[in-house]
Length: 87
Image (cartoon, rainbow, N blue to C red; front, top):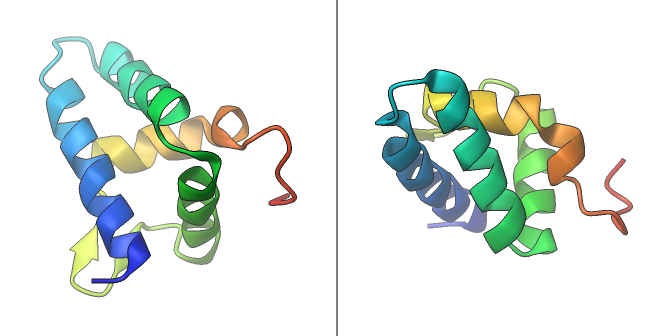
């Protein structure tokens, strides 16, 4: 398994947890908040670069869940580390 596949699995687990919330916006916020707080900058940069190359979130046989993809895409600026040269 390569690094992006591992990150997709992590993001999907987070997404599954927050998808259970009755209000989708709260779930989206929870996902973005968790990734921002607990993923190190390299992990966030890798995911954002992947989504720049694969906006549908597909990587071979694995893909980001709809809610994880939406949360990350909607919060791209917030999830980009401040000292990143990603942009």
